[in-house]
Image (cartoon, rainbow, N blue to C red; front, top):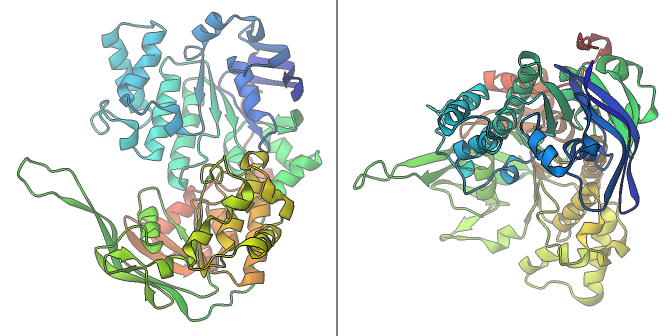
Amino acid sequence: MSLLDIRNLSLSIHGKPILRGISLRIAEGEIAALTGESGSGKSMTAFATLGLLPKGAKATGSITFDGTNLLTLAEPQMCDLRGREIGMVFQEPMTALNPVQTIGAQVMETILIHKAMPRDKAEARTRAVLKRVGLPPDHVPLSRYPHELSGGQRQRVVIAMAIALRPRLLIADEPTTALDVTTQAQILDLLRGLAREENMALMMITHDLAVVSDMADTLNVMRHGDIVESGPTGDVLRQMRHPYTRQLLAASRHQANLGAAKADAPLLSVQGVSRDYPMPRLSLFGPRPTFRAVKRVSFDIRRGERVGLVGESGCGKSTLTRAILGLEPVQEGQITLDGHPVWQDGHPNLKVRRKMQVVFQDPYGSFNPRHKVGRLITEPFHLLPDPPTGTARDRAIAEALTAVGLSPEDAGKHIHAFSGGQRQRIAIARALIIKPELIVFDEAVSALDVRVRAQILDLMADLSRAYGLTYLFISHDLSVVRSITDRVMVMRAGEIVEDRATKDIFDAPNHAYTRSLIAAAPQLPDDLEALNAPHPAL
């Protein structure tokens, strides 16, 4: 018998259709995946189940949870169900947590709001549930604040909040998108264990078919508010009756045509670089200890070379990147671009900085929403001693937008008028407009769904062939790194532990840490016949 039974659910917001008669069922202990591109209706299905629809939303059909149609319940009745019977794990843990409350208070709040037990027992339950998700209070005290935790630890706190009262249904909305591969594997194992051991139904929303193939019992493929294909995961991925399912699978396995590298003389040189950060004093008059985030790192990137940098959160990738871009000084060593120091006489060398640009992970967050695209992509002009104006400026804007597959007319639009993939194209146009010698891509495709990600990777490959780009590509997604780089550097605890050609790294990794990263990365099996059998309840 199904715990959650959604039948013929249609949803519109201010008259615009969002969901079109979808139906799906989830049994106790079952893991059901919803997959599809951004805007397909995955999250709206979850919000409809939780009764968290925006104003102007109108839903028809039925969402039956344990025999009760949730669409007929008043808000106080839904408040009683949320957290107690239905839990939710959101995509971005930092925004889901209150920055001014301790993690213990936030997990305990769920228990106290529902008056499930007195405060002393609620605190004991909080300790137990944090231990259950891998945060034992003797190692991670309840007095910690969210900013004091890593991304994986914050996601565990969000999961602890969601399962504090042992809900019968857990909804996880892209819970591992921003996590590195080893942390992602731990979170997925945790969610899988909760479903199996607690007999908890799990609705897993993700665009990653590799995660789905390894974890889900059933798969529902969504497109434009419809479920176009559903069934046991193995059956859906083996048969792929709908063309859209085949497109998603092809995009998941997509390899960009990077072309041969035109590597020339060294462009970026990092020699013996170390970066320290001060730590809190251990005593009132004692010396202030330091933490060494980067430890005597050395490497070269040749002109025209495409290099990847991978490693877990906290390994020093971001610290090293800031040093390369001249945003932070280093305590030891030197970084030069084309023979000129990035940091000189205690100040960043602006003549060098204008030769480097960066593309960030979140294209929307890196743009000012009040300005139009034409102004946004010309922001790097302030680095130039004589920036183009008038017709020359308009020509530069049109050239940059055309290079990334957009129209010159898009310069007059605001950033909210574009999709996630288009925003990332605009971010790349901003990086290209002053024709830098080095571009740093910092998790530039990790937030994109698989088809848009494939398009952006193809764009990068096209630009690399056309302009001979030199770039450093930082990512936790090893399949993307394999597709878009010539060489990979593996970083661990502030050190480069392996630096070899991409093919060699993936085919025959030398270092044990590299092997652990590759083993932790979810992968679609080459033989889809080998996929797991569905859950016994099916």
